Structures are given as structure tokens and as C-alpha cells.
Length: 559
Image (tube, rainbow, N blue to C red; front, side, top):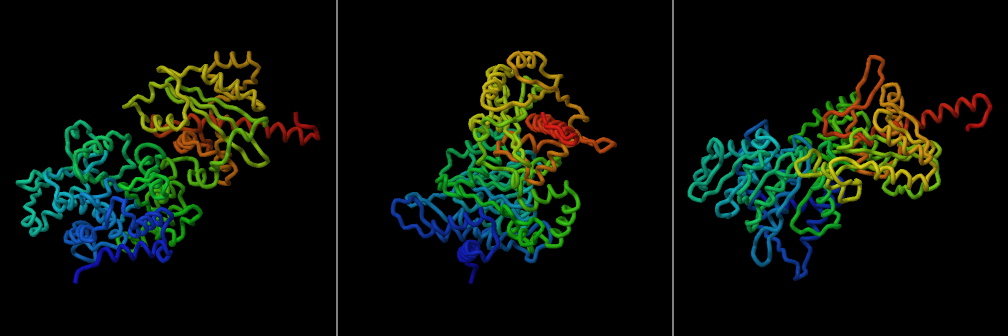
């Protein structure tokens, strides 16, 4: 008697929801969604459950051999969590036409979980078992080598399975897997978008979406499925260090679907990670994020990497991101982005609540053709509150420009002030500054004297107290270190502004022989303007504290 894949999947979903299997919130929501859907009886709901189709894909994949690494079985032996994903994606069909319900599937899971093996199996099933005339299957990634990972596994599986070749008349060639006489193919494709034009894709595996620099490849593939009756875009990825772009967009969309705030019946998402507040060093947390822990993910390896991460901050970032799917910002970020997100973010913070309070304002006007930033920092007792506003010329959000995707998304969401033309019109910043000066008590407005002489002259004529904060190691090192300490302690608060968070996460440190630090960026497109303005603001608050301590030591009142 064969395996009952649906029973395994159902048991997994029930045990996750009941807490018998440790799982994060997003996995619980994905399982609860399937449980709820299976219970639906409303006649007007357009989908029905087909156990045979749900089981068929699993049975097909388990006929395929392992081709890399050491496994306990010769052929693939699907784990319950994999059965859950596969049966859910392939088991739902339309009541009227019998076509597959899910058109996109996002599986975010840490390294070594066997996602490439599963993706290869899905691709081969779409090629051979989907009854799709002239099937066109692609494996797509940012580079050809990455795109070939799943395809190469599939190629080896076909080569080593004579029965498969005979039954489906499938042939593994040098650059494609094809079914003779049907015109069905499976090919690897990289981000050379021109090579994708004109395709009629029925199935796509998109590998490591977090590494895609823009949305062009994703959009071309998505559009190329439009003529197919039941296309499937199967996305597999670990987490990355980019909190914007197409991957972040798809994760947010999947989470909205799982939470029920977006009712897209054709999108499947599951996201393996740890929950907020979990101890990332505890093995119980590792099991949450790694459903294959003890199978393809070795416990000894996790222990060794966790131990290394505990001793080395840069290893910690890699461990959290790639082994636990926790996004922590740039891989070499100077600031602790996990603390920034979990200890410092308060989405209930509103700048209106600080009307009439004193603050320091700092500006970073380094480039008139790209991002410029203005930051306001308030202090209440031992806590600092940061609010930023960033400006961008509209020319910087033209398609093909660096950061096009994230800038366009932030513009639509109201997180960026976009000015007409190719350069920023400083009048926009001046108007905002003067308007806010009426609502708040500006103690000083800090600026880099190298950047904006005329701007400063105009602001001084309007009565603002302008003060130089030169972008030097002397001026930035101590405030940068203090900012890092405030983040770790949760004493630097922000409202979750994604532009500010992105720039803070992009800061890496240049360290000199005296252990002074200075903010740098790893790549030109990794902007740090709002972060630099924040560091300058901490400089002004440090000056304030120093002056206050001098007066207090002399028994005088602080001016």
C-alpha cells in the first residue's frame, strides 16, 4: 500500500496549529488557512479539493533519485512539511474547469532544507505530469549558474532514471530537458531579460528571489504566463539583507494573504522563521525555522554555527539571515538591525505627539541628483526619538536606475518626497524646515559645511540657528558608537520608516588604528544619507550633554 500523502499533510497542519510541532506564526497561519479551506462548504466558492491530484505530484517526486549529498534513501522521501506544501499547491482545482487554483507559490526557508531538490521535482512534474500541451518550464535566477542549480538536479534525475525517459519520452540534452513530439521544454534562464521576451511559460522556478536586484525578471516571467490556463510560478528563497524590492514585496504580499488582509485565493505562501522574542541561540527556535533539522540540516552543524555567531557579530548576521530567516539588514552592517527592528521600532510613534518639544535637526544634502535627508531627534529622559524625511528627484525613479523598485514603492507609500526634474529642488526642503520650525522647538539645525553654503545662508536669514557638523572621523566616531549602543539597549526609537531603516542597515564602518569608526557604504547604490543625518544628530545631542555636565559640575544652571 502506497503512502497517503494527504493524510501526512493533514496531520502536519493539525499538529502545527495545535502546537505539537514548533512553528512560527507564519507557518501556523499557512496551515490554518488550508484547514479552513478544507472545511468550506459554501457553494459559491469556486474551488474544490482533488485528493488524487494532491497525491500525484508527491508520488511522482518520490520516484526521482537523490543526486547530491548523502540521504537515507536512494529516491526522494518527502517529509510531512514538504507533503503539506505540495499537496496544498496542487490539490486545489476550479469547480468548473478543473484547472489548478494556485498560480504563485512563495516558499521562504533557510539553507540546506532541500528546497532546490523540491523545486527540481516540481519543475519536472510541470513538464511531464501536468497534461500541459507544449509546456515551457524555466528555472530563473539572477545569474545563469544560480538558474542552473534546480535545472542541473533535474537533468541528473532524468539521466539516472531510464524508466522516466522511456515512459514520458523525455530527453536530457546539454542545455534543455525536452519531450520529443510535444514541444515541451525545461530550460535554465538568467536575468538577461531580452532572452525571455516572447516566451509562453507554463511553469517557472525562481531561485533565491532575495538576490534579484530589481523586479524585471519576475515581471517578464509573470507576464509570459498570461496565455496559459494553469501556470505556476514556484518561488524558493532564503531571507536576504534587503528590506525592499521584489522579494520584500512578495513576502509582504504572502504575509497579507496568510493573515487574511488580502483575499488572493491563487497565491500560496509559507515562511519558515522564528517569532519575535524567541531566543535565536535556543535549539527550540532552530526547529521552528528549519523543518528539516535532523534530516538535511545537521544539528551539529547548527550548534557549531550558532557558537561561532555568538562570538562574532558578522557571523551572527549570517546565522540569523541564512539559518533562521531573520532579516537583519546588510550582511556587514555596523548597527544591530535585529535590535533596530525588534527593540527600537514603534509603529505607533507619531511626530505630531512631539509638537512643541525641543529637538535637534540635521541635514544630509550630499547629492542633489539622488537621496537627500532631514532628520529630527527628540529626547525624553533616557530615550531618543528619530523621525526622518527623505527627498529624491523624479529622474532617480526611472526604470533601470539603481534602486528603481524600492524608490518607486516608497514614493507610492508616501515615504519619499519626490521633486520634479533631475536634481532636488532645495526649496522643498526649505519649506518643510520652516513649516516644522513653527511646530517644534528647533535647538539647532546641523549641516555639513561642505554641502550647502547658500542653503544655510537662506535659513539663517529666516531665523534658524544653523551649526556645522563636518563629516569627519572626529565628529562622527563617538556619536556613531553611541548610536550603536542606544540601538542595542532599545533606547533609540523610530516609527518604522523603511527609508531610514534601509539607510541604517546599509552603514558599514571604516575603522582606523585608534578604533575610531566612520560610516561608509559597501556599494554605491546602498544609500546611507538618513543614517548619516542621524549620526550627526547624535553629535549635537552629545554636545548638549557635554555642555550640561560642565554647568552642572560648576553648580550653574544649564543654558
